[in-house]
Image 1 (cartoon, rainbow, N blue to C red):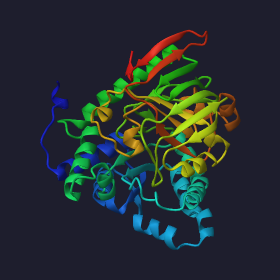
Image 2 (image 1 turned 180 degrees about the vertical axis):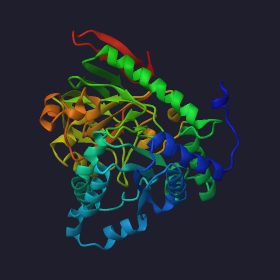
Image 3 (image 1 turned 180 degrees about the horizontal axis):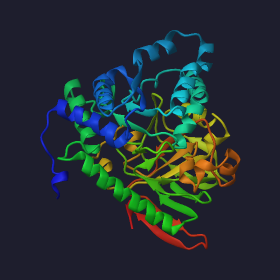
Image 4 (image 1 turned 60 degrees about the vertical axis):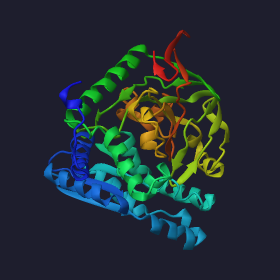
Length: 417
């Protein structure tokens, strides 16, 4: 074990400050003179303030933080007129898009209550999500094309901690969640920056090996899953950090354990069963099982939250098709922790997963130079949504299928062969 990976003792305040520093320097790759647009909830203010401080220390010209409030969100569902759920603050998302086009970086502090809207009217939830998806689309395209440097980092919040540790007191629960975040984001080591650089390099090596293989499809077999997924023409596997279109190097998700690419929107067939719950926009969806034909979901069920799932896949035609496939070993640090985080940022890095909706054009050769029509011709999906859900486990086997039809073992019982 190198000095950089040795665990060290720090106070909570020291760890929080270091997380803010790593988020800015490693995750975001913020450059002097660059603006930063950050989103956070009121419960994540302590980390947002540390990030703001480190952004200015790094030379940020301006940090603008947009805060959300769970109580205000619930007030809308309890008191707003029904017709209001077809509206979103388009002016706000237009402003975010304008900021990104002018070179601003994007950072999201995650920490939402995973069940905030679980008891609300699924129709209202679906309409509100669709309105936001439409309004946010121009800004989201700049993110999915990696035109800007961006990252997501998490902060522990009372509601999230209570969901993860329901048998503990609030103070104990939030303390456990913070430690889980510090561990999985590699803060509890002597030199987090060096450890992140080494981890980033390993993910790039794994992606390079897959790019050498040039598989045309992946075949999945596991409990409730028998599924073949074709990969997009001229696809590229990515992992870890990437150089954005503005020239800044960033690691979009902290933590990250995945290598991922773009599947072909018309080449998915078979049945897939989720191995972890999906927390989507404040609603828990559990027991997901879907059946694909020619790339499109033709049947979908869930043991909990099925109505929200149906609203989600009815967003547009692309919402029934896949925009991302990611491979994660079952022995990843997050899976090894044995914790279910009820948050996609973490749970997707504990298990191989797929994503409904919008593709990442950066996962295609010269994808950032292609028109929407050219992207579609290569198999890239187009949608208002991008929602990851987990299908990996220690019982999942994955094969790579070559262009000539040769089948090669890729993962066995959730681990790389």
